[in-house]
Image (cartoon, rainbow, N blue to C red; front, top):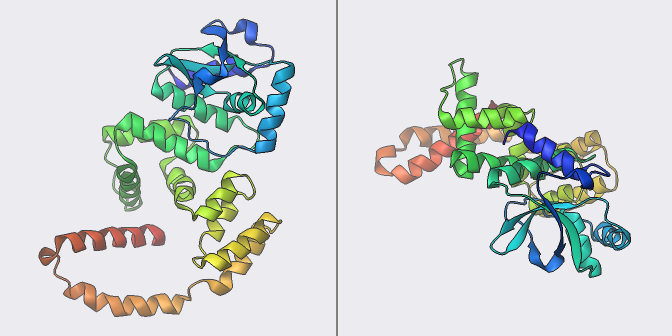
Length: 293
């Protein structure tokens, strides 16, 4: 199924008044207890009050069905998870659902489309969803995907042609279908997945924007970061956050001094005598090159 087909499927079952037109799957009333959360669903945070409000509204009338796929005698939810959780919250015994046979790839793509069609899409969820889809399509783990993105970035910036391996072409195609480039994904999305826990939680809950989250994450001291995070949630602008960060950032002269101290040690280091340490040093140097690049 192409991404356009997945988008059409998503639109078909979520448009108001479209229940009677949902003819590409089976529309039935399903026991809430027979539905379970998908392991492919990367969305974690939901507002409890919103979920309860949705549940109360569903007790009156359900205008839109959820989408599920049959699995092991039960049903795995594909989208409409808030409606399902709402039913659980208020004790509603059943929910209207469309049952559709879907692959893992289709489930992930529909979840991504759902997130991106929200009025305020969550960039963390988008990044995790894209990464999961890339993992599924390429067979690579997260570390290998990140390494490939960085390697191809260094090759491209050096002026050499990027080697079109099948894995790389797959990554490019997936990101392009969601209007992203590998460079954009690497610089603006991947870093969100390694944010400090407090900053990540605030971002997932929609309390701060991702640009503010990336800036605040630069503060390593937990107490200083928590204080600035609280102020950001109260309304600090990105520029004000950057101004607050400046006094606690590392001075350029301090970096230059450390480089001067380390350079002779690196020259003396014998990689052949300690291959594991050499590999670790090489990876750290690659990270430094990435930051400076």
